[in-house]
Image 1: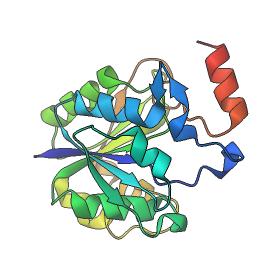
Image 2 (image 1 turned 90 degrees about the vertical axis):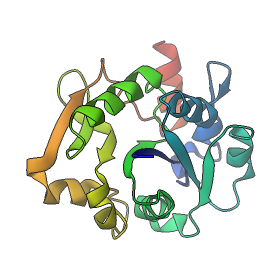
Image 3 (image 1 turned 90 degrees about the horizontal axis):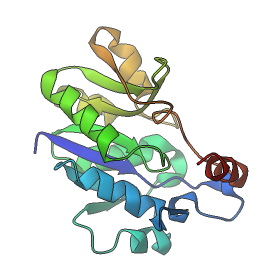
Length: 194
């Protein structure tokens, strides 16, 4: 288990104004289930980090061979989810995959895994085809202790900033690494453009 995919699915999603973006239908299934299936198809172990008290998210991944971790302090920002996932990853390198990016599928995740196999000591950050940095990101095992100390809502950005010499961008097709749908309007525009 040299690389574990951490699906961060513990955010409050307050900009959805009562809806839950992770249970939005994408190609006939909840987004969170779709992302978990795409991650599993890479052959990597998958950990889904969930918040307490959101049973619809747990139900969305029911029956899939993923491990779930509850981020008890999910309300303290993305770093709480990251810390919970890294603690469960057992010292392996981790791919940090936000759950709310519907243009990321197995092909994009496979490209990230292939880049990790080529350069396992590098921080790998997905980018749009124009080079704009996005998600997901892979952190080598030796940097996981630093991820486990993150605070606030910055995720792994501080770890990346502390090791610029180890960063490599991995271009993905189009804007797949950037598409992040946070509001009902974002979802409507995304669906209209498909």
